[in-house]
Length: 562
Image 1: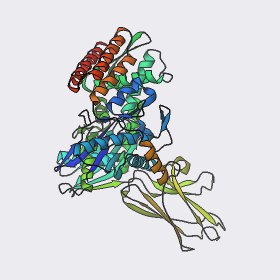
Image 2 (image 1 turned 45 degrees about the vertical axis):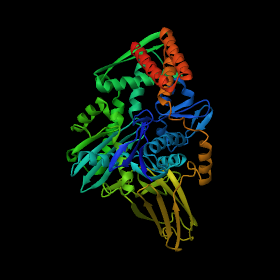
Image 3 (image 1 turned 180 degrees about the vertical axis):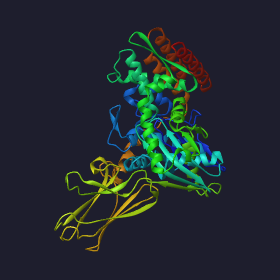
Image 4 (image 1 turned 120 degrees about the vertical axis):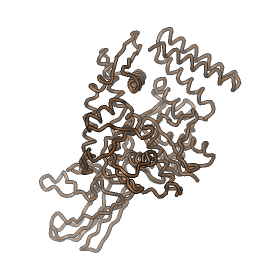
């Protein structure tokens, strides 16, 4: 049974398989390898995933969600048609669609997957990704860091014998920067840094806010449907600047046609705060690696948002080194995940590759802060960028005379005070009442390649040991709750693959009808009604022809409003 590799992205997702000694990206029902990470709930409870759902962001904002990967591992929920969903539940719908596409492509059932995650995902976010896989009916064989997957793909694509890379992975919602060495079929991650709330979506928002400022409009108080329309137009403007020197955002709203002209130079000026945040991430990765930019052979661009010319220009200016693309930035992480799935399957053509990974965040315990006992201090045990698997020990003692109990808090993060880090759990232990400093406690952290942390606390005085695999009870479902939620989500069935192009054109027509005004709106409605009649009355062959005609008519209408 095949193991699939999945790039579960903020903006788009992809699925990849190893087949016939080659890694292949799996097309969706529209024949495209990029599936928008957008979920929409229909009135009958069926689920649209992908391009059709993306069109419904404007026409049905109350039933459609996007960019939910940014909230993985949090308690935030999204309400669609009165039903509340967690980010991992919405992600599970995307994974179900990718799983279904791969099964149809391979002609066999699939139950296991390797899923890529941002290197800077913390423990909660990684668990949420695994949970999304379980909810989708997938055993997540391994989580692979996105830069690791990119480096793995780059090593196969470039055919270089060895090298040192700075992998700049800039997607729709996250930024990862990694320092990677490749030599003798070994890919070694040296250091990572990142920002889980920085991506191409932020450029869209900056453009949208600039438009509002120019025309005395309030972005923050804008109703959801209008905001979705403006963000879509901002995204189109950004994409135009990828291939052209100038782009015009034109929006007809409130009876007026308003416009904003942008160049890459003005976009760079508008987004200086974004570039400052990028610089901080790059500097941290280089500092932690102990490398200078002169010791880096290549700066490799990964992620769809890295195709923006302003990104390459910024990196060349900041690093004094011209970045390059190895393969398609949109696809390279998925290819790497597929390659790793092949390694897990013991494919003979790639099984000799060795991929090492590192711990992205420091793991430690709390110690008493005698100057402010309410704010315990972080004591690192496994520091960030430690090679995985890692097992390290710290030695501690009782903090006051005749203490009979200790609570060993387990934290993840870089802050001095524990309260500013993420609490992963706690171990409680009774100890003998002895003078301060006399108890001998050994705390051992073991962190494996799959991000599972085991903590062992030993009291040498009592010859007593307590061991625990950490879990965050507040965010994680029990086995019973997981099974119950899996059954509940089954009632939300994916729409069939048949007629997906017709559904896409219908959704596009509904979106255009909600955006346009006057005669153009009437024309969009006329085309939409005509296509609905054709679908209801005609044969499959005639419907396919009508869909093409409607698509061309909508193209012409959209061109005329620019």
